[in-house]
Length: 308
Image (cartoon, rainbow, N blue to C red; front, side, top):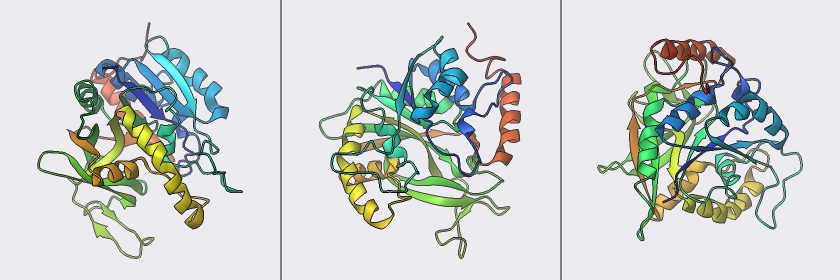
């Protein structure tokens, strides 16, 4: 079995953050948030990282993170482009928004030939999930009955921010800890009474228990995911170009849900109690910096990552 590689989705626009949050320093020596996730992945066993970036930002990624990472890992770059579409489709005039997380993962289809993990560049996941995922990917190849995927699941109460709403994939698992479904909730807020979500712009709210299982886009796949996502891309585009051509997104979990419903994939849920940290908003930045400084003082991370 090939060694798993790590795919980092880093081409998002950061509209709520107000800038390129992927490249905002959070560590004492200029480390980015993704430095810590990649460090956790490296000590779990991952040896290759593939950055999915905008073409115009590749040189900046080289300078800000890739060059120092290359001392410890193989580093590769792929581009998420609006015009990377199946034959017969073109970008609608006026669209600037990327096509979503499934297309971001597909940007790596020409360099990823075996199992891989995929993460967001602006989330801190904690070390436990990477170790669980690496162990799973190295011991669970696809079977004749179904593809063998995995997802690290987090407790909702560990993944919210005090500074606004977040989007989360609310998950259901069966008694054998296989994923049954993922429902995207694009506006979840934290309140003194607990998390809640809205589907109508805040006109009404539904409470969610703090121990609700959610996806943070820490997934483990075989090569089959990329092949299936590419094959299903035309159907998504046909629907979206007719209904929401400027903002429709091809979500990575939506492809997973289709494969589960068709009984083509089994997705093992790997639980993590680690606390998430992220930079959805500018106001999140100080708490992220403080949390990483505390974890460094406690010895979870060295004072300077990627030292020779």
